[in-house]
Length: 410
Image (cartoon, rainbow, N blue to C red; front, side, top):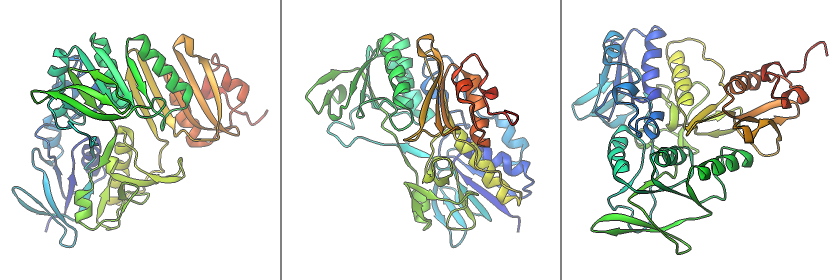
């Protein structure tokens, strides 16, 4: 019987896993199942260029249709997997049962909902998929006012898109600052002030008590303190929950909100791997098991899992890195922010281009850059290598960060 690898989920991780299996020499069947009735696409543009009407659906595709055919990847679009039987090593879809030798879960995450009155009214949306973006784009064009619940990456990207389009834009954030789990306060404050300069209004330390509607459509957000914010469109961006339904059904071990995997992406079942948003892996840079929701993480884990399936050596865990585009700002993060680090500023925030370094002694553990791409690229290498920095040189933005290191002959 011909061996088969099945991948459930066709976003960045799933598509990369299929490609890496072929590149790694897997000579059996590769079947890629997607619940969405669309070719796989880049997700980051959904909240920015696609939502703004600057890019079409064809322009955000991960791969053209010919790629799957030419790579002998059996791509099943619009065919959700209904059941996973780990004992029998089979999956079930609406068209039948399929056996596998190896299976990769790339099921991603879904938007978290707010359990408050009025949450099901029309005009309240989340953004996780192309389908969502298709609905939001015309609604945004018609809206005069937009309220975004959640000041995370997606929320701020949508706020940027809405403000640039001339919409009255309000962000409601439960924490006392933006991106509190991802960025140091200095970066949060800079982004807050930049958005305010563009006309965005913020409510910090605020929680939603209810959504008010009229004729079945949301018209306002009521906060716990009684404030009422009128809105033509409400976007809820309060994080995601891993899609672990199939994993739980198969009896896989769940941890830290996701499917527990080892350093090769293997779950508690030796024939099943998990990658991307759904996977909870020990991260040596955080010193803890966690889920990372980023394109980079999904792609890296896909390559790792495919290498293991193909019997090749798996690479070391890469340094986590992230990015977000807001207005004319390119915000790039390398490593993971942590408490107790020494903070060092390179450049002047007033110039709109700077990097905040986080150090443990003279070792770089995280770097947060705005419009300093060279700093970001250098930081990823320095963190990975554990190279000691020359502090005075690292502080001097006129010296390339890659050269601000302790020299052996010093």
